[in-house]
Amino acid sequence: NAGVMQNPRHLVRRRGQEARLRCSPMKGHSHVYWYRQLPEEGLKFMVYLQKENIIDESGMPKERFSAEFPKEGPSILRIQQVVRGDSAAYFCASSPFQASSYNEQFFGPGTRLTVL
Amino acid sequence: DQQVKQNSPSLSVQEGRISILNCDYTNSMFDYFLWYKKYPAEGPTFLISISSIKDKNEDGRFTVFLNKSAKHLSLHIVPSQPGDSAVYFCAASRGTGGGADGLTFGKGTHLIIQP
Image 1 (cartoon, chains in turn brown, cyan):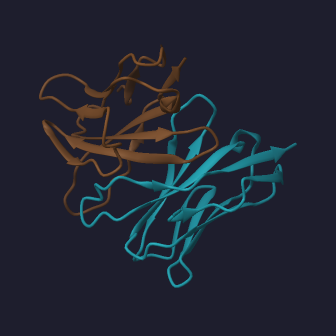
Image 2 (cartoon, chains in turn red, orange):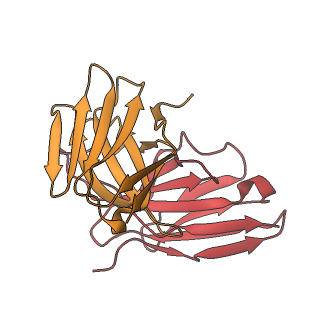
């Protein structure tokens, strides 16, 4: 009965490197969301995915950021050529889908990215 | 442009008393509202939600009130307990059936329960 799992919990990268953050949704959940939290801020929506589909990426920076949720395996948030401003906590959430009702999103513990 | 606002960064309440956390929103398309609780170095934990067709939802010590005309909601915790000390986030969704939109969060209110 595992919840949403994220790894790594902490990630340190130097400027210019790539960061890969992984998220495994709760069992039975087909929707995955990524959020970013900067210090002293609320969570900001980045992207919403279903298996093999990006549904809404309106919150994603246009460059360097990409996300996928393949048919098999976890969802991946990828940040290329990281900069210091990418340092933040990145949270993944998942939800089931019921067409006629609202669904809470359940969050993972987050990945704390530090860019040196 | 903040669509969900929590104007009190922190709130201190005595143990056993009522805690009232407030949230305002500007987007009239929001029709589902949630409260999350967050401890340091952990992910947010869902507490309680309310859809726009209701004005109140209660779950144990937690009650959420929604005033659509004022675009305001509040979370009441009674009685407050030491374990309630955490950051509370208000969130809103524009989901229409399935509620599958990304959530818009406020900046949070740090609730401190004093013994």
